[in-house]
Amino acid sequence: MTSSPLIAAIRQRLNEAGYDDLPTPFRMAGVEFQFTGALRGRHGRALDLVLLIDTTAGSFGDSDGARVRARVQALSRALDVTASRYVLTVVLAGATLPGDIEELTDTARVLHVDTLPVDQAVNCLEDSLRVLLPLSIPQQGADEQDGTAQEQLEKALKNVVDGATIKTIMDAAERGEEAVTEAIASLIDAALVKKEEKA
Image 1 (tube, one colour):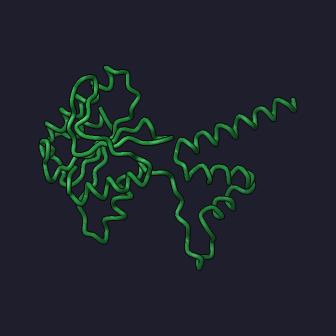
Image 2: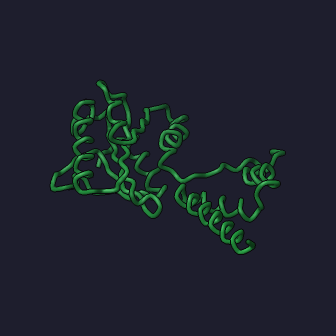
Image 3: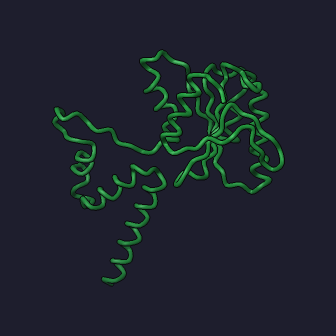
């Protein structure tokens, strides 16, 4: 594992969000792959495979865009050969890589986390990794007149959706995107069954 503070911060935030570290190097389809770090999601994100690449330190050739692209594409082919359902995400941490790194987007979801001053680092990290993190609606301060985000949502939808439905969706949001999708699907199924029973 690397001692880079930026990689450590990314790893810690993903661990908090339900990702487990994988040992590196790891093997896929009989081929050994070495990356700065690798994580796999749990529960609703169990098919997420996240690769951490420290573009500043350059370990394992990570400061060379062509080498990074070749290694990620090789891993993607190995996943295809094994009929894996993993969704591959590459997190580039640090300096922008030279070369046509945009080609990686054909193979994997690519996120970039810049090195920023400490006072901006937390917000930048959250924004950069947002797609990997559970959905959350920030609570407003008690002195704000409009109430919490949930109260605002309930107010906006009160004539369209009942409070129980909103609560079900908000509770599911704390468990991630897949939980929200499942909750909405269950609500729709229940409404269809109820409609058929009335017919």
